[in-house]
Amino acid sequence: MFPILEIAIIVQFSAFFGAWPTIFSLVFTALIGFLLIRHQGIKILHDFRREIKAGQIPAQHMLDGLCFLCGAVLLITPGFCTDALGFLALIPAFRYPALGWLTNRVKTSSPHVRCDSAYVAGSTIDGKFTDVTDRQRSASTDKLSLPPTI
Image (cartoon, rainbow, N blue to C red; front, side, top):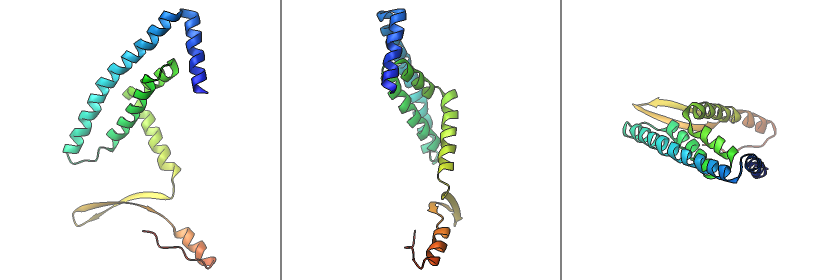
């Protein structure tokens, strides 16, 4: 459905402005996109390396890089809608709120999985676990036993 929309917009743009302005617009938006990719990509890579050297996990920069890669793919794809979405993915003022929304969406979509940390003898142990207490209670009433989870 999306490619049909892209083709329709390109045809309408070409009918209104002509073929050469349409081609120029598509090439020009791709060039601007590549310049943004170069500038923002270097910044993300620099911040990523700085956090690695500081001994931190660069989770935010990995999300930035993923969003950035999606934006780059959208810019390479010809079309005005994909270019608009690609530019929005490359501009930090739009990227960070979208990543915040996506992060909150992922956190609320999996209510049974929790990530907690415990401080043990000077080191942090991170873990991911699933709360199965309700399943164990229902299994004991059904006279079935669940295999232990680790």
